[in-house]
Length: 200
Image (cartoon, rainbow, N blue to C red; front, side):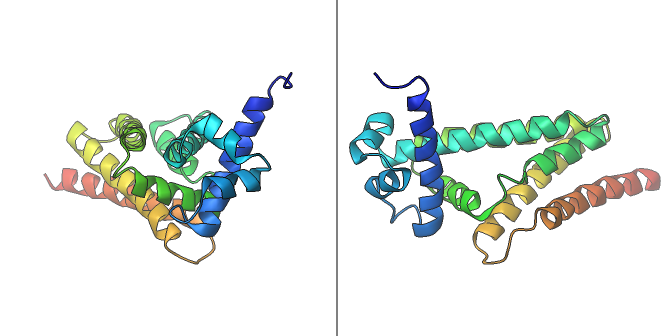
């Protein structure tokens, strides 16, 4: 009989192998057999667990989204004010174990596949809606509802844009610089609203 937890361990090793293989070869060129070999399991086992390459990518993205959610919650646990919570959400989106080349490559593959794969598209919509909602909720303590929603969408777009630019760049990842770039946007938007309010 298989050891207790062996299936979960194998699934996790296949997900890790998927991230590394996408980074090394690109999603289009990588095969299930190559992923299996990298994970040290048989090709048949990958198909048994995941069925297809698209389903394996979807499982990989669910795992990464779970890890991302955990990083954001850990960051939020230390925040006390709405502005600190906004910073925590931003920092969580650039968590150390997420904002690294292999994971960034996997996210880019996820974005591309979401255009043609409904399950991946749904995961991406849930992630995007949750990010915008969390930002809007905290920005509403500082701004009127419409402004909060607009700046939340801009902030989410900045976060996604930094990830995509990093995926297309050979430059070394710098999470502090990425966080600072998004923070500058938020600060400037809040200050601009305050300035407009004084003028009226």
